[in-house]
Amino acid sequence: MFHLIGLGLNEKSISLQALEAIKKCKYVFIEEYTVKLPYTKKELEKIVKKKIISIRREEVESLHVLLKAKKENVALLVYGAPLSATTHITIIDECIKQKIPYEIVYNAGVFDGIAQTGLQLYKFGKTASMPRWQKNYEPDSFMQIIVDNQKIHAHSLLLIDPHFSSGDALSQFEKICKKNNIHLEKIIICSRLGTKQAKIFYGRIPQLKTKKILEPFCFILPAKLHFFEEQFIQRFS
Image (tube, rainbow, N blue to C red):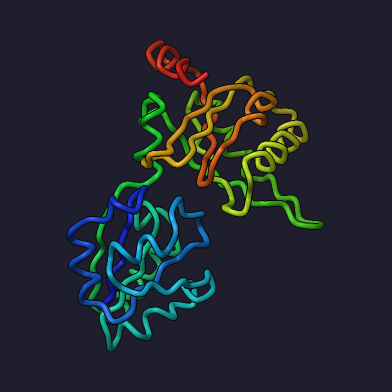
């Protein structure tokens, strides 16, 4: 059987349902390529009382874990919510096709955590992701999603490549905004939501560059604010 398990936002948010599933598993994998965990794998191993094997993106996308799930109980641990990434629903689709029994263990993710900003969730538009630029490869097409959201007065959640520091991410984002002639007054940065180190920052990019912001973090680009949203978000300035 294949178990897709959401870990939630901190090491103690793993559910009883998840622990019961892990106890039955011969292999317990974790994918760490979509996010930088706010805790160590060793800390998690102490809680689940099992050895956890890190797995690369290509191993997940090639459905390597399902080969073992045909014969053994296998768990794939995912930070946050288990089905936020399209890769993970692809695995479930393959389970159905190959008639492999599966279980999905849900948990909270970044889409839950951002409500702590006071922004109303139903006012968010499409979510975008900012990849880290490489030599001769500087993608910025995700900005169109933000532009489209702004046109309908919808807030934008921008997920950040886990290999970024906050300073580098802000510098690259600033360059992209200038390149696309987009002016942003203030943005929100959410850091380590759901943990004891959780912090929310609200300000202009030059100001935010001076802050110590821990991974994982995400950006929120607010659109037109409701008066309550405006009042609430000011406390993070």
